[in-house]
Amino acid sequence: MGWFEHLDGVAFRRAIRCRDVRTVLAMAATYDDDTVRDLFLTVGYDEGDLSLYDFIVEIIQIEETAQWHEIASLLLSQPFCHHAGAYERSFSHAIRATELDPDDVRLKEYVLFFHVILDKLLSEEEAERLALQILSVSPSSHVARQHVYSEAGWTQLRRLDSKTTF
Figure 1: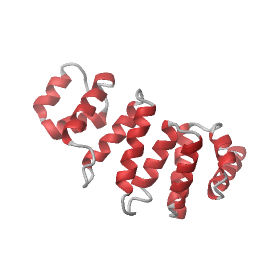
Figure 2: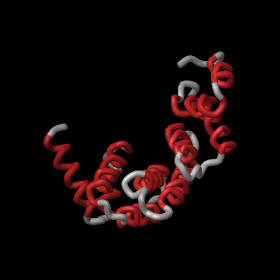
Figure 3: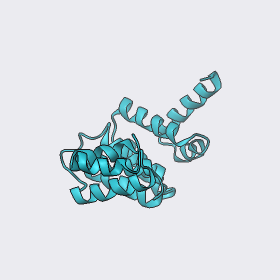
């Protein structure tokens, strides 16, 4: 990373920390989704302040996109997971993200996470249906294949293998 990118990243983190909605929205438009997500997660871990989630909700009210819902979900399922009701709210944001961008396989794979957590917010039937849906468009999806294997065993996986390879 060059010095200009570094300074720009510092300015973006500062805008996040100051909860400057206009600047964050303007700067987010100049970054790729992964960078925006990583910057928010970094600030979430560094600050540990749940008001960052409230800031994302404010952004969602202005500009509702799958990206902002994913960031809200990740903040609640990672740095803020210890707060009461965090996983339930995180799950709601993850579902909304897939509704806003139904073709994003990565988001659907993320939703499968909510089946493996202790609370099992995604039912067995929904998880299986989602895993098979993911495999129908992305046969090499490791996450979906792992779910099908762990739930159905080798027989189901071998049937899938007749159509795909690892």
